[in-house]
Amino acid sequence: MNYRKALDFIINEKQISISVLAKQLEVNKRWIEIILKNDEWNPCLKTILKISDLTATDTAIFLRYAGDTFQGAIGNHTIYPEDISDTLRYYRFKKELSENQLAQITGFQISSISFRESNRYCNLPTLSTLENYCKAYNISIGEFINTATNINHQILHFNSMCRTLKLNRSLSLR
Image (cartoon, one colour):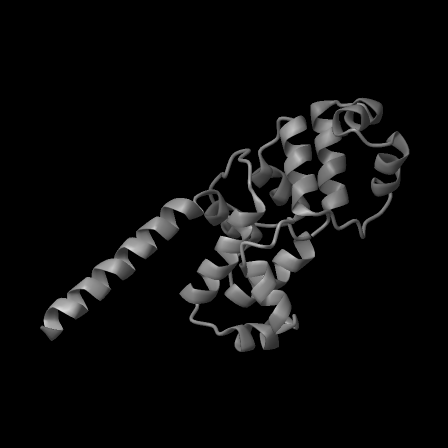
């Protein structure tokens, strides 16, 4: 994925000057000039969400420009670190992977996986980290972010189903 090309495309499409974008992002103009020359630029998710919001660009479109292909729009939603943690845990359970198995697939340490899935994790991960997880889960980053924006409803539904199953099991034992 080439995030620099996506940013360059959005700047040209929206006809935003580098100095205006720098002012909106509250960064140095030189920083933007440097990343526009760096094909290896790998921003954190928070930066992409902020750029998308300030340029009035759908986050899904930004990711498409960067090279990710997926269906459906996710809009410009605020994603909190807890949403990412919950989504990481949700997909690990959905794919029926243990932390050990996920560590072998991604190359991350088990303690890192556990920490990222916990509510103590208070940062948005880099996109390269999310790419590793998404490859392990066999999903796109767009699908992951779409799930993260709706995760509270899914978790409530999942928890509700678990409670229902436990209730039925306890009733059948009586």
